[in-house]
Length: 521
Image (cartoon, rainbow, N blue to C red; front, top):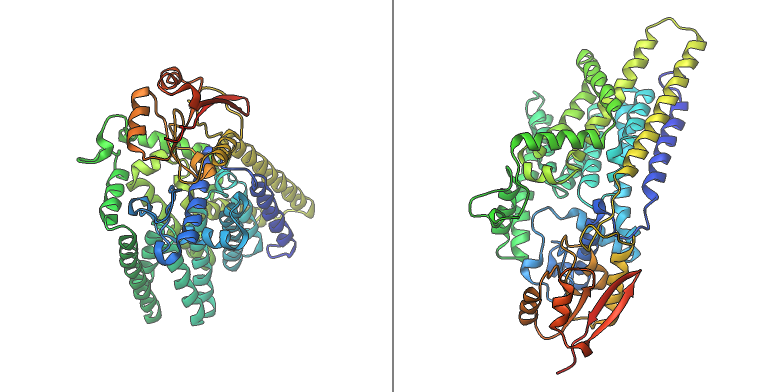
């Protein structure tokens, strides 16, 4: 096949179909996986936006609040821009509140990212290079595992790639509409996540250094959009919570360094991870090894060398510049917010576009080397066969690695084996037996599972002693209930303090509990 043969389009479509099939495998899975438990929080935020109204919430997500209206100010999550929760709200408003509806938002963004990578690379270097970039992208364990992550990263990558596609078309076609579309995509990146600010500023600085007046005007436009978005966000979160700025600043300081900031609540014993720089570096290297294939890094290295050697070639130079813009967004964010990147395995997701471009061009570099050899048609077919085997092997290895990373979110004690769907089953059971405004106490769930999302009730969790239970009873209002996991150490002493006539044993999915329903007094 020639470098620009239409047959490469079929290969690209096959790669995208593979990605679609991989991401749709778990579309209907409830929020029971550790790495996608955020979905329950943003589904709840969508419900709160719809029941309270956007005029009240201003689009700021109330991710964990399940109580009656009005939403209290401290229930709003004010640490991130709000476009992703708004997109999820729109999806829920149209299709209903279901797990698959919420997951559609990041999945569609991931699929569009693959399409945008094709458009970007094809425009700059032809169809064959574009196929290798897309194929490399869809075989990355990071993409296969976190491509459906209900969080900011998949959407942000899509907006950055969309902006780069528009900028490429502006450079080639010189029509102002592409500059406008690029600015709009940057605006959406700004309102998706904080690395969007780094990306937009990096693009603006790059255009500011150019001599052409249209480029400099575009740079000033991006800088104006960036500053305006930041100011508007600050007033947006203050609208729903007068203490939002202090809350945001506390969150920033806790995500810096190792999480131990003077005066921070995280400074107390047992709160937040404590680590040194060496431990942080080891954790990042472990994540890079876990979320990407080692052979993939070889292609990335080859691609980086190729881009450097081809830096005078317009197409290669432009793709190298595009990869740098996305790297400028993801890498500093990962390095500066060490507490955040230490905790989250997907911290490097924002640079996945850069990795896909450079790794895909590593494969293209090998083919260009073959182009320089005077081979026969037979040798060309052999090279195509070997490439197909390599890509299929990468896809299989990436898929297996992604599946190996799946783990169940445990809500009991992390040791006892739990049924796969215990969280939604217990939650729906509690929602069925307790009135809407009931506060439910429990002696398990130390890691804040989606139990309250499925119960649609306020749940006071992890009461590990009778004293903690009694304190919660005294401070949780009148409408109370409780559920006690009978195998917990705290169960006997908690049950000893409850009237026997108010406690009913129940078994849910093979796990024994006791439900406390206080008599009406």
